[in-house]
Image 1 (cartoon, helix red, strand yellow):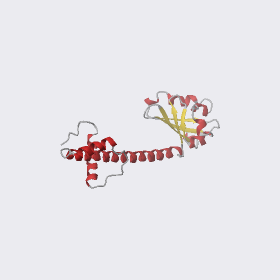
Image 2 (cartoon, helix red, strand yellow; image 1 turned 120 degrees about the vertical axis):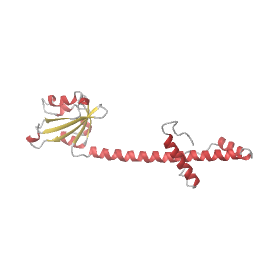
Image 3 (cartoon, helix red, strand yellow; image 1 turned 45 degrees about the vertical axis):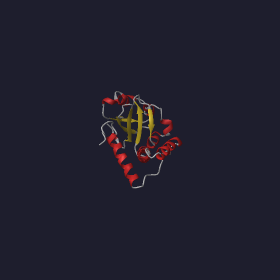
Image 4 (cartoon, helix red, strand yellow; image 1 turned 180 degrees about the vertical axis):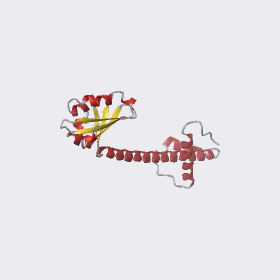
Length: 200
């Protein structure tokens, strides 16, 4: 039996090899996505097959090459399926972010806006493109920096933070902030406070 502990992906390679052999044995390999054998390789196989002493080796080698080809085709199919799944998943979460009813913001640790969703554009009365790069404090009423600045100090030391701030038009919004997993940005949700009881 082959040693399947020589490298980390040995078990999955072994499964792939068994699947390829099974497909070849049943005559139903997947459509070939890879290249065909080169002229030199075919010539060498033909020469070996023509020699009675080497014919068995040539057949064995050809079968091994076919197995590798099917392995590659199976691997290619799996990669394509994984990429399709990742694209769908990314599109799903992108849609959730962009079309969420609450204002979502991604900020740099210094308070500059990296990205906002459509609801944030509506909340601040500006396009999402224009908001990118602005400091959050510039969108708030004067004097609100003291409320939001603590959210940007050592954000990785706190799991989440909340604050209520005032906008220039005297509306109040509640901020829920949390550092991103990589610590390079801050995730933020802003919801408009409906009455004074929503304020901290």
